[in-house]
Image (tube, rainbow, N blue to C red; front, side, top):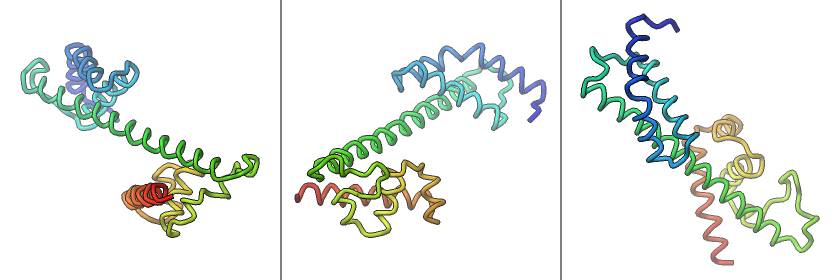
Length: 172
């Protein structure tokens, strides 16, 4: 994608004026240096992709827009990490439950063919989603493709499956 010289010069001006400010905003949200750097990069890529241009890079409107873009990029990264942590947490709980459910730890399947008792109680459509996401470690997109359903549907089924398993676990 070849950018016009005017756009390139605008992005360069924005970078020299706002890069450190953007980093500070991102760091204040993410509390992680590398994630803050990623957020700044994501924000600049968005500016380039959307061909954002203001007449003056140091105008108040431009500054507000860039702060909004970096804030949104940081929040997106934060939410993504939060969701990944939930999945990791559920995976750890499922592994603990699976090991506790087997009298002999050597009987635990490495392939995930034998599932936890909690998963066995799930309806097939929820079992398949948990199996793909947790046991087989597929991404949401891979799971959606494999099951021929939408990504939103995968997330919703996973959410419902977790509720069902928590309820079963609390009753046990």
